Amino acid sequence: MIDIDAVRATLARLQTDICTVLEATDGQARFRCDEWTRAEGGGGSTRVLADGGVFEQAGVNFSHVHGAALPPSASASRPQLAGRSFQALGVSLVVHPRNPYVPTSHANVRFFVAERPGEEPIWWFGGGFDLTPYYGFDDDCTHWHRTARDACAPFGAELYPRFKAWCDEYFFIKHRNEPRGIGGLFFDDYNSGEFARDLAFIDAVGHAYLDAYRPIVERRRDTPYGTREREFQALRRGRYVEFNLVYDRGTLFGLQSGGRTDSILMSLPPQVAWRYAWQPEPGSPEERLYTRYLKPRDWLAGFD
Image (cartoon, rainbow, N blue to C red; front, side, top):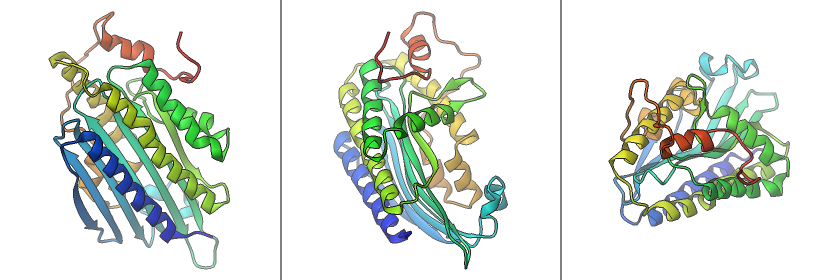
């Protein structure tokens, strides 16, 4: 049986846990918290950390929104949802570090249910996490994916390879013909038929994000960098903006359903750049990102 209160409590606790760890890791800045309501129904809590010692910006958003019906643009691809009331709950976060040797990271876990009197509800979970490095490191990539695999393992050995492949496909910038980063996990429409088990799975994924990301931050946070690295970081952040505004389902759903704009767009980096027809210098560390890391591969199999 679906338990919305259990989903809400799980996700609210996850938001607090993530913010606590990120604050401790940064060691300087604290999260600002904005509670908000949505005129059409529901609301949430947006927490943003800015100008920290490690994190230039980090946003961790919890939302629980509901309505009598989905907007036509959101239900067009799912005709079975038309005319049903809905509830959507989720935690979504993006962390943009200051040091270009520390990757940007993203995580999201969510629940959706659509109901109509006298009929069985339609429900599913979704989520995952992915990593966007500017300068790649083999051990970071292996650690990230090993943690993702281990989070999935208690719920089925088949989940990691399935959701890893889905992540590679989803976080792909089609108009650039390049991945956004090194991937991780992505899944949607997930319903095993056991609500409590599926809720435990997204809780495990959400907390595994911390196990995956914090050691990488600690390893790279004090790496020396200069203007060149910051300029490359800003250019690569431009790719991040392109993906989020053109392809990201969560961003599009939030804007189409009348969500809080500041909370939806908190994923965008504070400093970003575009340069016409830019290409990395052959043989440079910047080119190495493209040739070694921005390509789908089995990160657990070692490197050639």
